[in-house]
Amino acid sequence: MAISVLLDTHALLWALVEPEKLSWAAREIIEDPQNVVVVSAVSAWEITIKYDLGRLPEARTVIDGFQHHIQVLRAVELAISSTHAITAGSLKSPHRDPFDRMLVAQSLVEGLSLVSKDPELRQFAVPLIW
Image 1 (spheres, rainbow, N blue to C red):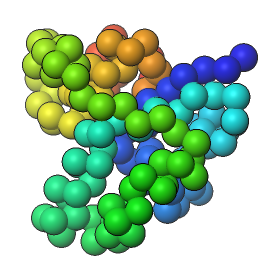
Image 2: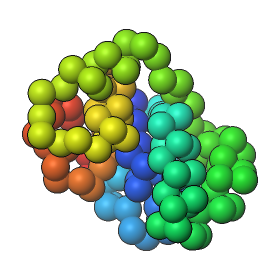
Image 3: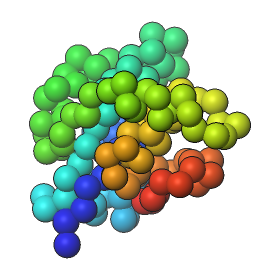
Image 4: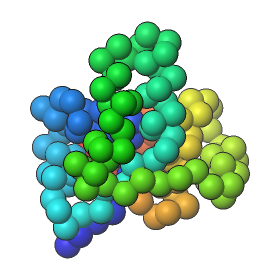
């Protein structure tokens, strides 16, 4: 049975650069051509900001070839809509990371499971896969 998932930014980076860091379940889902893998525009934003801050020095090739990498993963890119933004801003949680909040909001609005290792995201009512 095919499923649709949204990749957290770390899951996207690991899928592209270090797939051995993915859990067995995450890797299997991402690699199964029957599944729909979704990548948020917020991940491109997060990767670029963290690269510019020196926190992801290895991410230059991911940034430069972002569209190509998305195609290699057979992923669909998800833009940020005003509905996503309002949902992210309305989430009741002490979790303040704007990138995580947007990924959770997109998962909720679009009905997607979120592929993430981040245990803090369990506080949201979004299905997590790891």
